[in-house]
Length: 330
Length: 309
Image 1 (cartoon, rainbow over the protein chains, first blue to last red):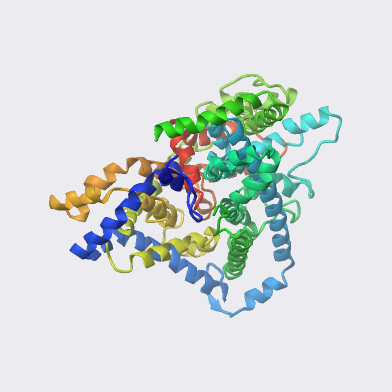
Image 2 (tube, chains in turn yellow, orange):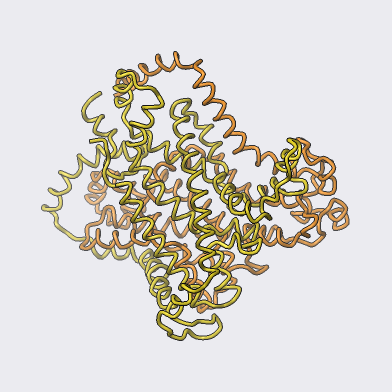
């Protein structure tokens, strides 16, 4: 193996992992030398064409990202019935959130969902990815595992709503056949959140496994070769090398999946609509109800500010704890 | 390079051969097959149910084959059968405007994809290749938008669309995603960075300006990444539920996901029209599945890449 190839294989800090990025690295490195020379020779700025090129995207950015963000913070400080005009009330909404039992309920329900969803999804994805790595690199297999991710949340929710139906759903038929009692998966206050978490684990496990799988490709083979010469078993290789070396990739994956998980909405909206009683009223569904069913837009905005802050803190914490920036492979 | 690769993979091959029959490997294969069944079986069950007669379903709930085979569910979803026939098979008899929802979904996902990919590729080119002051700073600010959760901008954007008088119109649904997403710019910029400078330099020698260089040379060279991005954007938009629910939840602008939610809540709680529901979900999923089967390789290869998202 030539030194250049080895360098090309090694993952750089938090870098994306794909065939493309590996192939590309070489020409890019070659170019940087020429780049500076041509700049000093020409030195022209392409400001005018650049402004034209970025104009549409910049309009989109300012109008549909920056402006709504500023407005979101502003609305959270107002009492705003959608039909009226916003009235400034300072931090009153946030004080009210602190005293709102339904908000705390929604936060608790969301946390329960996130823990179940992310816990199962991450472990299953890891197992699947390692199995793919060790057993087969078949594209057909990876494609099959990816199928649930391609259909919408709404469809995934409906299919499982049918499979888990209390009366004639297949799963309950099976449970009855084993002699146990049928379970009202979506209608039982204990089972509702785990069931919704399960549906979304089903939809995302293959996708997450492919992300982990891509990360596994960045671990150089010589690490395993060295380990097998040392007589390390598969099991201990996994714990002592694969997992630590995968950490930067895992950290990124967790930040993405946790952020997504906190915003669960579709599955709840299609199946339980927050019920039974309040057990599945997750934060985003609560925001939706407050803002659109009850027309309390200021209050809904304030809750979404809180959700935004929670997500920011979670992401920062995860990156910090998992030291996403630095690799052990040095 | 080729020889190294062959040499590289030859060694573990020998070892792998030894492991082929170990109990650990058999167990791993069994687990993999179990995962595959859990993943794929619901798709089969959708089809099996969609080809059944709703009224007959309770009589054989665990039959692996369609119960009382019929195309009726597809016909009633697509509005082809008669009302009497629909009711006889267990449908509600209410007319569903499926073709309209299908059209709306195509317009919504298609327009967002076209606009987003086009405008983002222009911006990505400016960020990757044109030289101008403040380039990296502006790019950094754009990327920052990746951190903002959609729910946070959805509420104010709803007000904006409402104030523009575009509530319950397709343009109102399309607009926010039409001009840019930070991810699309990031994705394409990575590819443009990898194109050799020499190509642009020779184009410049021929007197081509940035505009012509981009449209005549760079864009045609980048069909692979642009197609990949377009497919990913189309699938994501096609599956979108929250935003269309907020701004397009009336009969005329409903997309399939929203319509399915309504369809499901309208079926009587005691005896839902399961065959009809499953036929509807299959039709709603079909375009995305067709795209996937056509471009599976591209989509699968892009997953590790989009992980940075």
